[in-house]
Image (cartoon, rainbow, N blue to C red; front, side):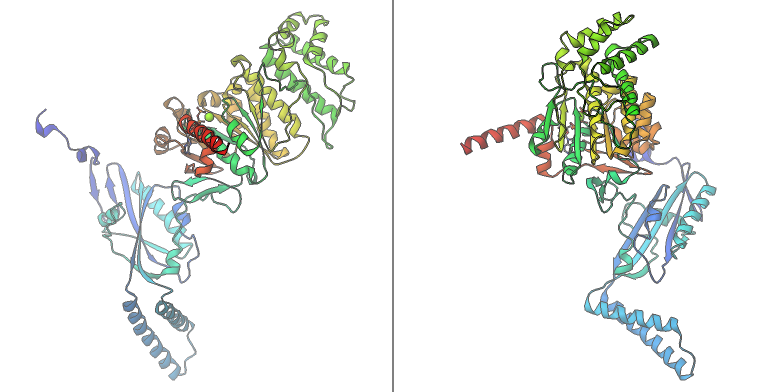
Length: 581
Ligand SMILES: Nc1ncnc2c1ncn2[C@@H]1O[C@H](COP(=O)(O)OP(=O)(O)OP(=O)(O)O)[C@@H](O)[C@H]1O
Ligand SMILES: [Mg+2]
C-alpha cells in the first residue's frame, strides 16, 4: 500500500468535521455547548449539585480547584474589611439607619479571617464548566434551559461561554487544562458541598453492602425489604459471578437474622452452609431425606381452610402436570377427583380441621387411581414414581426440617429429567411451610431456568414472587438462560415483580433482548458484554448503576467456587488437621 494511503489512528478516530460557532460547536453531527458557573449564593446546602449530575443527559463536567495562598487572601480581606468599615462609619456619621447587607458582609469577613488565621479554613479558586451535547441547536437550547433552571433553583447562576466555545470544550476534556479561566473564590465549606458526586445514590442508612458503585466509588448499600417488594433477579453468563454475588448477600444477611433457603442445583452452596452451621438437605433418588408431595399447608388464622385446601389441590395438579406431561381436560378432572378421594381416605376434607392431620402418600393416590374408571393410563404413568426406580424420591413421608437459619437443598445428584420436579417439590414444600410462621426470609432459586422451561414451573415461581411480600419473603431468581427466561410471559412478570435486578457479564446471544427489556444504552450493552467477573449493572427501581461486587478475604474463602482456591483451602485444612493431632 502506498504510504499516503495508510491512515493514522488519529484520522480514524477524529470526527468528520468540527466547527466552532459563537454559542456552540459542532462535532460531526453532534452539537455541544459549554456553560460555566458564574455566581453562587451566600449559603450552599449539601449535594446541591446532584440534580445536575443525575440529569438524564450526556455531558462532561470539569471542576478546577486551585488553592490560594492564605497570606495573600488575608491581606485582601483586611483591605476589603477596611473599606466596608469606613463606609459603615461614614454612614453612621451621617446618622443613616444601619445597613444589614453591610453588617453581614463585615461579619462574614471577620469570621473568615479568624478561621483562615487559625488554619481551620482555606481559600480556593473554583471553576466549574459543563459541556452538554445534543443533536440539534434547538435541543441544545432546551438542555441549557433545563440545566439553568435546576441551578437557579439553588441560586447558582450559569452562563454560556459565548465566543469561547472552543476553549470551553477543551476545558471539559479530561486533560486538566483550564482554558476558560473563569473562577470564583470559595472557602472550604461551600466548596465541599460540591462533593460527593453521587450519581444515583444507592446508599441508605440500613441494610447490607452489595458492592461498590463503579461510577463514584460510593457504597451500594440498602435493605431489600424496604423496597416495594423484596424480590431480586440475577442474570448473567456462566462464570460471571452470579452465585458469588448471591452468596455474599447470604453471608451478610445472616447477620441480621434473615432466614435463607436455597435451591442449589450445582452443590455450590454446601460449603458455605457447612461453614456457617446451616443445614444442607440432599434431595435425590438415593437420598434418605424426603419431601412428601401430598403434605398439606396449615391455614393461617385469617385464612379460610376450605380456600387453602382448594388452592393446595390446584398447586398439586400443577405438580402432577410436571410428572405426567400434558394432560387433557378429562384427565385433569380425574386427577382432581382422585386427589380429593385420597385426602378423604385420611379424613381430610375442605371442611375438616386438617392442620395436624397425617397426609397421605403418593401410593395412596396410586391406589385410588387404580380403582377409578378412565384413569388407567394415569395410573400406569404414576407407577414409575410409586413403585419403580423413583419411588424413593416421592413416596415417603417428609423428614426434612426448615428450622435452621440457612437451609440449602442440594439437587445436583438428581437425574436431569427429575430436576424440575424436584425444584417444584421443594419450592412447594417451602411455600407451604413458610406461611405458617411469619419471618423475614430470602428464598434463592439458582439456575432457575430448569424450572422456567416448563410453563407450569414458571407459573409457580411467579406465584411466589407475587405473593411473597405478604409473607415477608424475598425471592431471588438466578438464571443464565435469559432469552428463554424473558421469552416466557411469566419470566417477564417475575422480572417486573422484582425491585432488584442485577445484570452480570452477558453473552452476545442474550444481549439484544436484555438491551430491549432494560432499555440499555449502547455503552451499557458493551459494558455488559465485556464485564469482568464480579462487575455488572444494578437496577433498583428507577435508578441503575455499575457495580463491583467485592468480598473481604474471609468472605471470599467461604463463598468462592474457584476449583483452584477450593483445592488450596482443602490442602490448608488437611495441614491444619495434621498439626492439631
Ligand atoms: N466478585 C468476585 N470477586 C472475586 N471472584 C469472583 C467474584 N465473582 C465471582 N468470582 C469467581 O468467579 C467464578 C465464577 O463465579 P460464579 O460461580 O459465581 O459464576 P456464575 O455466574 O454463578 O456461573 P454459573 O452460571 O456457571 O453458575 C468463581 O470461581 C468465583 O469464585
Ligand atoms: Mg452459579
